[in-house]
Length: 310
Image (tube, rainbow, N blue to C red):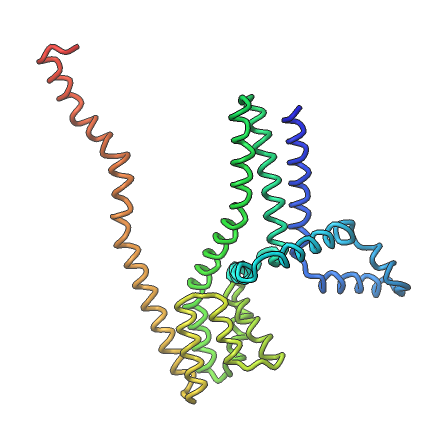
């Protein structure tokens, strides 16, 4: 009975998480624009706000506001330094699924409940005795608490690696575009049009901030602090210094492009030098014992036969 109850609660929690993650991706502005487009195409005038709200799905009308309200309350009760650190991690991860700090805290609670009930159901299905039965939900609660942080950290490292790998090609295109006569902002636009990666989205955000009136230096500096990639930070600092000193930006881009390529070769050589050391431990644990058995096994058997050991 406990197993069935825990399985049902875990299934309900899983459905809630899937629905929330599926709906949190689309911004509210896009949703409203789509709704207004439907009313415009059908030629029907909007009579009241209640009518528009009733056309929304049940998740957007009931569940999502409730989850957002819980998230705001949890974020308000959280420590300010922890909230800032969590917001920084979400920014480094590219804000997956449109998560905010409150949404992440709600997701952590749902993960704790879901994985905790899964651990309880697994322990009940294995028919563990009562002292060991508590290990399932306790381990599930711990794993459920750590799982969202591990996911965000993994996405953060993957995004930084994506930016690092996309930087040389983007700098080459920037250099060619500027040398062909385009301005720096237009060259950034060319990069955003050609590539679809994390670096292009960051450049697109910089261009949007510049169009809204933010100075270019501040937008670029905020981009460097937001991503925390050393090569990208060095490139942006060189661009900022060229803006402040009035140096030709084409020469700076060419030098930075060559420097990024040189560092990329150095990282490849460093990775190649680390490969033998990383291969040593699997060889010592897996291959060498097998070789010892094959080579020294017959000799050991002969020695045992000589001494009369059966």
